[in-house]
Image 1: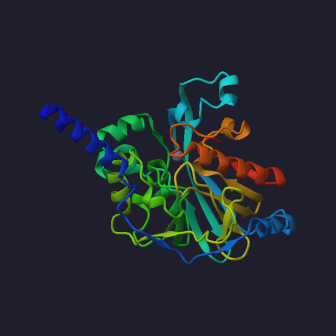
Image 2 (image 1 turned 60 degrees about the vertical axis):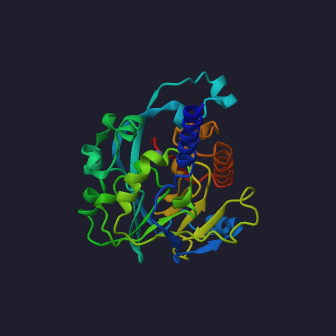
Length: 317
Ligand SMILES: [Zn+2]
């Protein structure tokens, strides 16, 4: 009897410990870059601005990879069922983006993987479970932030993250320690059992860095479930952060008025091209599928109102 209670207590304790695990022990603080802007005001800029914007955007494929389709797409969604989708491996890519603003300089959006993370993840505290579950042995690495930055003539001014999963911060080991890093509010504090296996990697990636800066979405939308909240990052209508919680608590999409027209980076609000085109939210990789779906449909509605927007999904061309 006593042993049973002891085991039960240990199990409950373990479950509580898993649930209580935040994404990182690193701190976040309110950032001062950018200002909240209403959807209506942002969309007026899209309507009235020339097709071409001021920002150069370049996409880099950090790695080819595979992932479980059941994580990338909610296979229980009726649309996925009627398309006959079932659990299998899906080819994906891991991206980082360079953003060059004419006066504010060079920024990266997400970081892809570093060479060290791709070739020796254990040295960056990726444990066996994480390496196995994420199929890190199936990664075909091409380039990391160091390869991108060495061809630039100017210093890196900041990194804008879509969220903090390892395939988006896996290149931080090649980013200078004093570079400001921006995330959605609450991203560091999200509690999820998978953090039990990823937290050491995230903490290591952020070691020695200043507190993460959060986008100030406060007051940008009356009801975030009805309307996207946005921040005008450079206060000049060129780049916007959009709050899209669901995949993670602080997930962010970015809308960029590039020299080739407006581009939407959905982040992992939609990993796949199929998911975007069929309005099917991600599956087990998202912490809140219902909220993720709301964010996905909000992004789709934005693009429906402004069909000139080019959409780049999280992990496929
Ligand atoms: Zn991802």
